[in-house]
Image (cartoon, rainbow, N blue to C red; front, side):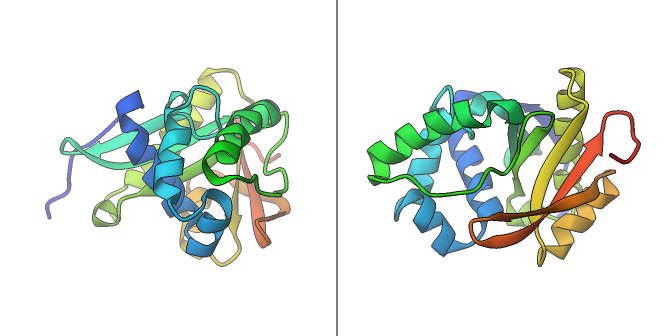
Amino acid sequence: MNRPKITLRAAREEDASTIAMAVALAIGVEETLHDYCGEDYLDVLTKLALAENTQYSWRYAIVAECDGVAAGAVVGYDGARLQELREGTFAILRREVGRIPNIDDETEAGEYYLDSVAVVPEFRGYGVGAALVNAFCERAFAEGAECVGLIVEEENVDAEKLYLSQGFTQVGERLFFGHQMHHLQKSSRGERR
């Protein structure tokens, strides 16, 4: 495949399945997806993406297209809104799955949180992931955020390399879904936090 033309845009409601796919790919582990969203996790994640006030809402996402085909997405929000957005997320999980997960907080006030980013496998290696991360950071900083944060599994060396190449630095560790994660941040001013 020739290098595709990458186009980034704000997500729309009709992008819910693309956002669901990105969140599922970002979570990555089938067992964790089942624990979080049940057997029909893509359907549940799509409902979460269609909703107005959830952690995965289309309102907080950016979609990448390669030559007009959905190639990936990034979704995130102001960390100060985590509990509010979790309420919306958990309401749908309670209705669709019959339970809510017991999970640690992955972000907090003072950080604009990059929750999930993923690229469809056939479009990997063309810079789509870097473009999505960069666009997300630009949007967060334009909205007044002083730093963007994310967590990445210790074993996910390729993803961490991408984030480090985009100016993120490790600021700590967090336990999330039973996995040890590196907590990374990028400052709007470019200096280490």
